[in-house]
Length: 63
Image 1 (cartoon, rainbow, N blue to C red):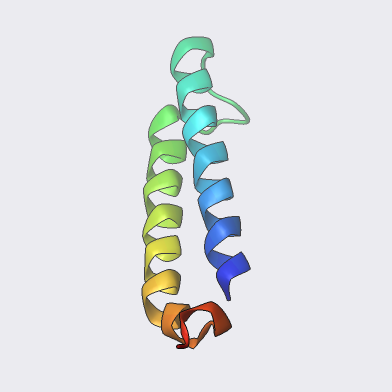
Image 2 (image 1 turned 135 degrees about the vertical axis):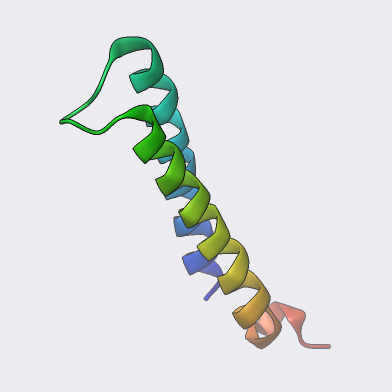
């Protein structure tokens, strides 16, 4: 489950980069910078939730 958090974080970083690019260059495929910004926020929240929820089940967290 640790990979889920890392994957969602990577997707959030990609959405953030796309939001910055679209702010300067214009819409990409009809999606405004606000859309990518919202996607970034939602993916980051999902990453946090997955780490908080499933983090205690990982073998590294066990004593």
